[in-house]
Image (cartoon, helix red, strand yellow):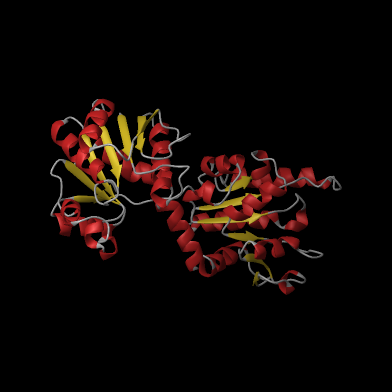
Length: 375
């Protein structure tokens, strides 16, 4: 499709709506659509195929003529807040006129805010301005970023209004490196119910087979789990390669290749990558049989992640450790993890955001169907 997006300003101008505009351009272009960006300020390096700059001094008639030439072949024109906020009245009026005369185009009024329901905006403009902001356009479709806003539109304007939520770019928000971001997407990390990180060398005392068995038990309990094992070989231990072969064979036997991930097979593990993995994880899982100290417990604490480990010294003396009894078998440990972790509000919130509010999901579940199926 040929899609135009209009807002008062665009990045590098900073703002919440500007970020939404930028993400919509990225998502729509990645989906193969042709994008035109229309704004008064900004828009450089937006990724749009075409930038149409506007002048704040232009009249309603001039804007109508100018935009008619620029947008007449558009399939969809999306304008953010321009239809409901009194910051560019000439542009708002021109869009009403354009929608009335170009019927083959869908004109989508994307509502983040409504000045007509917010007394804070009364100083902006005179009675005629507020009358314009309070009057629906019969040639526009209305979309709102929350159900609350959608209800305000329905009540105020008496028109149908879809709810299409805002989202976030998880990789940008979490400052993930490109390699880790690609790893997360490829291995469906964002869709997991639980992500466990196990930074360890490939030696038997690290209890890696316990991790495999716990993953198997979690999967059997219906939990979508991803287990991130850094799995560096121990250059000082010849038995490391043999132990690795045993672990890999166990993973194959249990058919856990999608759940139990040997991260070093896909990512170069260095200090920055390890930091990224802590950010990805919901918790540290550290089932060692013995340790001299247990440095990952401290690292997990600094990332605000619980550190699940057996009740052994010195692990049980470190801040942030969440210990389970040494007598627990893998099934017991899995049940303990389900009870202790999956009920935490912080983990539930992370999973909900990742599942419902990352831009890729919003595009698939909301924006693409909206474009394909007009109201």
